[in-house]
Image (cartoon, rainbow, N blue to C red; front, side):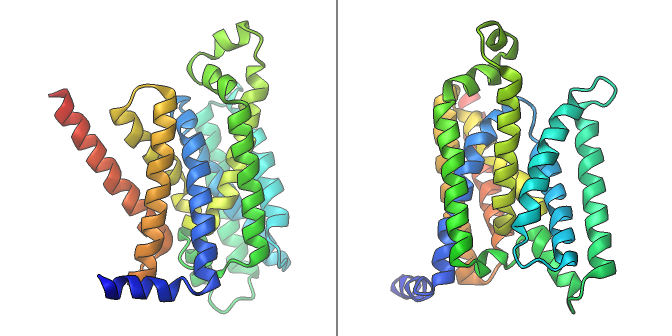
Length: 281
């Protein structure tokens, strides 16, 4: 045990490991807070759709040769979130079809652009890192860390300030409108914040695993708890603990960071679901 702590102490003496832990915990916290609302409103797959859009935007940024890919990824993902919400409200194109249409299209176009125009000698490695977050979380710069802290602060502030309205819109949108709450504007705000979280989470777990950060902690908490506040708090605790455990295990055993975090989330969900079934019986 002493040897294990000494190993962790050695690794955490490096700034890039400290940066990975800070960003990882912030992303996990933000994802879990909005995850409950997205799951209850049946918007779970919006995270998956936007993550594919972010991948397409990153491919464009790489092809153009930008060193700061966030310049393209952030605005494109936010605009896509708005379009996805508007398109999903169209009676001719249902919400699930809109997600599939935008996400698959962006993923395919992004992969094609990287293969056609990328100057990298290891295209397959770059794509794998982007999709699964293999090493990108361990290559963060100090400026990127501060950017993540600022964006996470915005997400947390919005959730706290609009908590009561988010609660109302989550459970009964028609009643919320009747009481004077601008539900459409709030849904748009939720979509934009979700886009911010997606952009943040790409460095942690990659494009294909982002929805796991949103879904699993929320489902784990909802399997045992019933009140909205308790589910949100429990989801946040689960997400942060799994993120910390995943990063620590990946550092110790050289496993992919994103996959390790998601595996931890799945394990916790299995435990919570088992306890829930035992309680029901």
